[in-house]
Image (cartoon, rainbow, N blue to C red; front, side):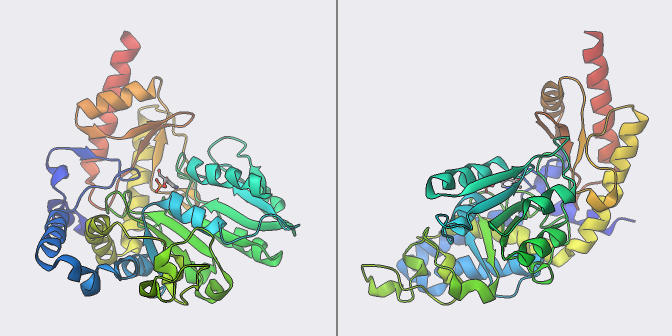
Length: 385
Ligand SMILES: Cc1ncc(COP(=O)(O)O)c(C=O)c1O
């Protein structure tokens, strides 16, 4: 008995589509349509008063729903538009012109983060990218060796987007703190499918977004900052919402707020926050431990089905380092993924990896059997052509 299948009726797309792409865009909850309608009604009926009746606080009140998923406390997470904005904000907290100017990034990090890291070179940063020997995994020793006394910031993806490899955040944070460096962890591919506890880890910053495992929709990313660091941090990427007295409209340098508003910038993307809410509520209600237990079972089933069909599995088999995605490498993977989509089976393809397949809490076992059978039939047809 899989109790989580009860949730299927809350996700309209599952009626017609085999939806195995929640690592890219989670299915939309039915109630999200009501939330967006609510946004329109509040705007239409309350007008400007909506700001003081909830909109102004929304980057923090919605952030609280993320906080309970990642082990942060209330008022410790703020919402932005996406991870790229959050990562830029984090790196803007540091002076890169001194002796401690090294930024260590893992070779599996999301490219957007690295574009930001390399952009800091003009401010004096030295970027050290720790290469993955196989493009899919990264032995922890390589990361730890790269972190030294000149390191200011370590940027690490908790779960790698390409391969779903789970990195040892605990070891990386410990090493960084030993040498006085900070750590920003990108939780986009872990939060909502793998238990994360930012407080227990002691991580300094964490970023992530909504569109994947959290079923929250585009335009809503989140930033966690360790509360005891707040007073020391003065982000250069800022805005009037971060001011202690925003409605005094004071010109000149900013006088930062003491609370999480310190890490905001300008007017928040309010409709995106309405659309993100339902997914977060559902993940909170189910609990990530139950989601992970199911994910481990179903990713194992996918691996076994691929083995039976002699399809090469490129992602980790070890449950300790296996995230929510199984990567299967078939010839012409991009074409196979497109043909699967035509048959209403949604997965995706990433160069140098393969086809990424992700069950989520709403996935039925027989959908996995079906997807692999369709892959085999497409690969056979292609083989004959
Ligand atoms: C690990 C990871 N980080 C960041 C991103 C993208 O972040 P954003 O578009 O919110 O800047 C993705 C999206 O695919 C991702 O998988």
